[in-house]
Image (tube, rainbow, N blue to C red):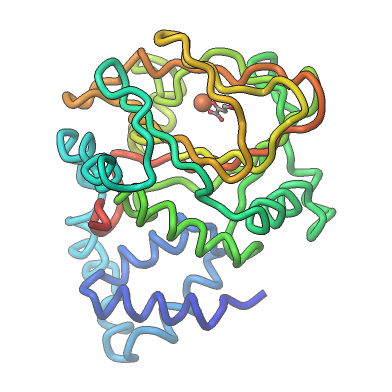
Length: 288
Ligand SMILES: O=C(O)CCC(=O)C(=O)O
Ligand SMILES: [Fe+2]
């Protein structure tokens, strides 16, 4: 499937806004486009001379110098959502021991249903095979909601970025999760634990996880709350409600008070999407 014209327009506006070819290439790749689609979008969006000049390896390297910088952790603790929390539809659940916020009706019922269908793989039944049946820790099924397969996810990603105030080019591909009765995600932190193989594998290259932005797409009949162990708070799923938290402290160190669990679903199904932001990325880290 060819990359959409909308994405070519986006690519053009990124380049016009001063992003380098290399930064834009990485941003598109992070969003899940194939190398072929990325090349097509860049070729269409960049004036021919620029593309030829800038696509040269040495120019690409010069361009990427500004990329993959570590975040300013203090600024990361005060993104737009936090700064505006007092006069917006954001509910502050905790701010001292952990920064945890909720936003009711972040997505409409229609958007939630569209996402549930995408997760179920109705649109792409063959993709069901790529769902992992997870380990003992996480028994739900997960999938990546790539925008070239599900273009409507693009506007949801934009809404997340604009609400939180962090750029999608500093985030992972949106993940969908589907739990059935008995399934759960046992207590865990979302950050990569320093000293573990996982930390070496993910955090050292793509960066540590910063904010988690999670949206409940439905309300299971029973169970399935999200439990924050340290503050002993369980958030009950509500269709369209987003919750988000900062996994790091102002120092940039992981905040152990963010450890949480997806409690077992007791009846019905539970669907969520999650977007994890990182402390490294391309382009501007903040949207506002
Ligand atoms: O299902 C939940 O409520 C929590 C999910 C979660 O913690 C995760 O995906 O990291
Ligand atoms: Fe989690």
